[in-house]
Amino acid sequence: MLAAMAAATCLSIPLRARASEPEVGDNGLHVQDWFVESFLDLQEDLTDAADNGRHFAILWEQRGCPYCRELHAVNLSRPKIVSYLQQNFDILQLDLWGSRAVTDFDGEELEERALARKWQINFTPTIVFFPNDPQAVAGKPGRSSEVARMPGYFKPFHFATMFEYVRDGQHQVQSFQRYLQDKFARLEAEGKSADVW
Image (cartoon, rainbow, N blue to C red; front, side, top):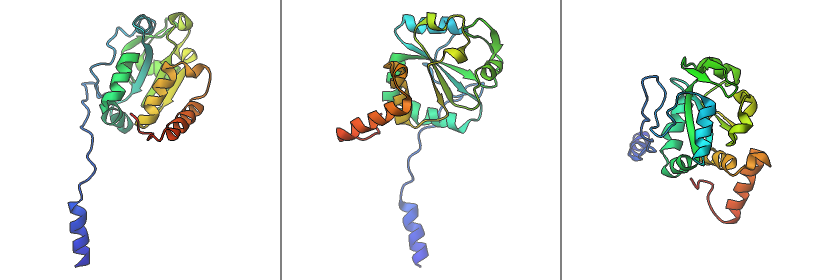
């Protein structure tokens, strides 16, 4: 009798609402209509971003990646995060196993999968950030030009904070871990939650 009552009580408690299922494109990658559409010339994409006052980042994903799904379903479903990214970054999505031709900053043209190997992209999602000065990367391979890398899925607070870290130029003066710890301390001193995004 007690077991039946406990089961009935558990069934009456609503399960945590899940974020809506993110849209998937024909290539099996999740879709965001505000991602950069480009001719996959990375120097040109970075120059366009800089000319528009934004930073440039590349998001590597792959078909069937559960953490990529989580990135889209959770982080990129938050209007505040999306608004911040759209205002401050141009994000190009590439496929870890894709065959589209991409021109690296050094001028070498490779399929996405070969570029992923060249840049040592080992898992998804991985986000690679570049300086917003096109001259700083001209003629150099992307792997040696990146200013920060987000290896894997970060929860919303850490995810958004990494973009702030790059946007504010803090990658030039301190580690991401130090920046994150300082932000946690500041929020705690202000009596605010770490889930500000």
